[in-house]
Length: 379
Image (cartoon, rainbow, N blue to C red):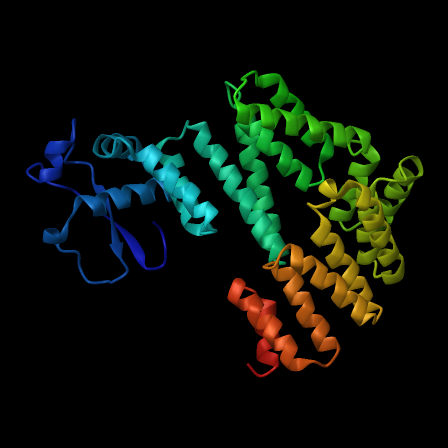
């Protein structure tokens, strides 16, 4: 696949070459792509291999979709590797599970270029982008999280418009929109999922039950209310004053919705109103005790937000307790570990801070803030 140590070279393969005999309709006038290592020495014909050509084609499928010969390359590839769809799909899913997101992305992009009408592949790309959002949110890399959120949204938008409809796309999109606090859209796609599925397969029955539960939760908590959505959108746009107006109006009608108290605390924290924000987050956790399963998806975020407020109020022991509580739930959450490092710095515990930031870099080597802090501390 494409990286800084590889390059594409196009060559014309003579008809007497062994590869030509394997390909129906072989055209020696069309150059074939080769994927070469980064060395700059001249390519030698005697080193040509079928694998180099196939790798070159995969690179074209992934990154050169406008290549004038791509349809020809697709025919060749499918002839030489008739089982490639299942093989690459399985490999990509395994890479996603192992958090090897870059390679999974390369595999799925190549597969999409090879089978441009294959909607299951596009759905897998949406799921991959969704996983990358989750990863970068935990890493505290908001710019990357926003980037992949947009990518995930565009991918889901495409698969949700597929004909015939793909039920799994609507089910998974429901969770994506819930995480984005877009509850009206989440409710809509989950309702569509229930309309589309009729199978009595056990796995499908479980998904139907989960979809129905989420719809009920959204309705009973009034999370599809326009005031709630408006408050979230205003926070996203950096208009906290308008967000506070919306969320307070919502709370007048729905005072026991923990999600609303989280939004209230979030907006107040962004305004650096640390005391008011901490009280909102504490109330959020108190309300969530009755809905532990619902609260679980946001528990670490709430604890982290509360800890930041307490840290700014110099209530360091309380802040640490909440950060440790969050870390027990998600031991590799880089955002939590980084905040523990920041707290240690505020307390003058330099060696302890170094240990936390070294852990951050071990988990997420691209964390520029952790590297910067370590450098400042003499590492």
